Image 1 (tube, rainbow, N blue to C red):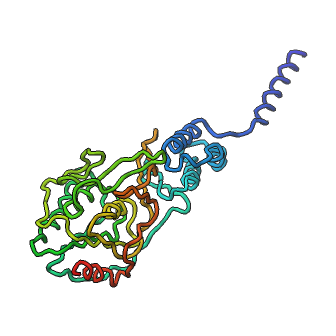
Image 2 (image 1 turned 45 degrees about the vertical axis):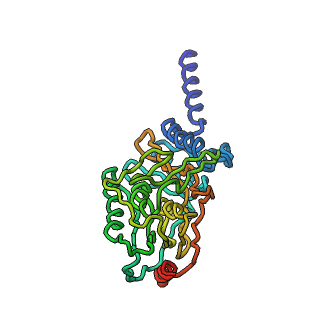
Image 3 (image 1 turned 180 degrees about the vertical axis):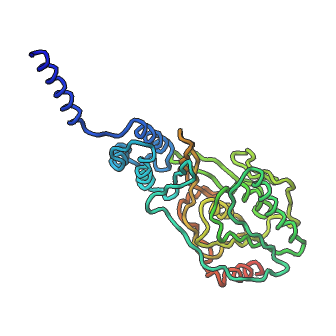
Length: 318
């Protein structure tokens, strides 16, 4: 009788311990969330100004007793908000995305029709996303725009960036290079003041002297170093802003329109263990004179979309 009574007490004790145990986050969920946070802490543009102990505490509080990777997605959204860069985002394996609260969204006014004078060149540079091969074709199309209009009578060029929401800057840079000119036209600057110069050289977009995209048939202007008017609006973001910055500080150049979106920072992609991707803001953009951005590019001449083209042409014709 005593033996059975002892065994019964043992089972009651075990049952009581399990019932009193606090529920906690599952190991799989915890490991994945730490994977994301470790990348943020090591690479974020704001890594030197964030209290990472408090940051992690808030993120883990948001996910509670998450049991799966999907359960920690609200915590990733919270982390993206706390980063405060307004540009980072997360891509799920199924193609869905997560953004932080307060991420900048920009809109543009209607673009009015216009007529390009015969003695003015006009180049439209739109946003681009695609493969390496598609990037070369994109750069070639921009250079073809330039080639088809160039003549000894051209007195200046309009570079229209309006509506360029970004993507991959390198095909854009390789394409517009003949009008932009050779040499360094911008920089990436990280929080530790490490700098990488980028620009254009003989049909190539380059960073630190290394080729990123090479146009298959580079063009050179008949009249090099031309006068250039750059058209801006609030729908220009990210890589589109990089092209706007490339013209800042260039001689014989003036920008017209309205301030850009204000996402003039550089992102880098990090692939995670479940094939998702963290697209993280890691550095500021800076112009050829090392002026830092991360804010909207304000045009030299503010003008509505209705009048901006005529204002640009008037200046080029002066």
